[in-house]
Length: 159
Image (cartoon, rainbow, N blue to C red; front, side, top):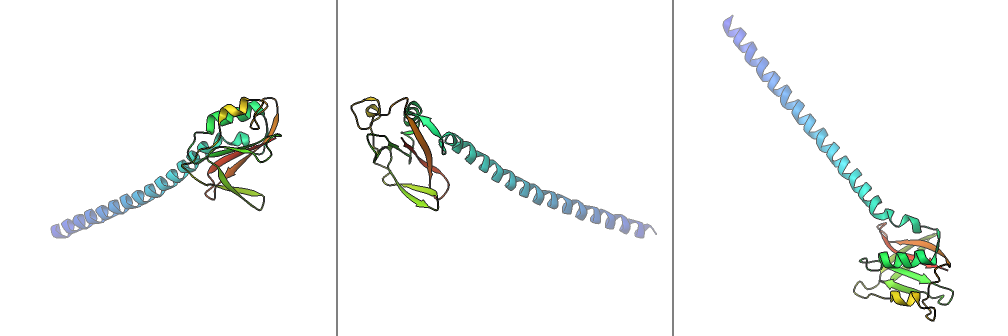
């Protein structure tokens, strides 16, 4: 009787240990999945925040002074270009990097042509005699150029 009681206690202990290990493994696996989900959500939020500064230029109408402010803010950004088309300069002038732009079903995609080549002189946008002059009170239609990875690569301002 004593041996049977000891055997039952050992069996119960082994059973409880296996149950505890199983519970810990299940919790660990679900915690890993929750961590992966949280990392993906955090990555999405981070991408949205990094692109949020460009949403004001997505298909909006802005003034010439806002165009020059955008030039000051973004022209030194890596792998980024800004095209300004004025009434005097219909072909436009690139600032920062120039982009190759392709139209695909009402979507514009762009890629930097030469990362090491920087273009445009900001001072010319303030000289009325220059073809690159941006009238501060002029109206410009703004649009965003993204690459195939959905990263903003440039802005286009057309008067």
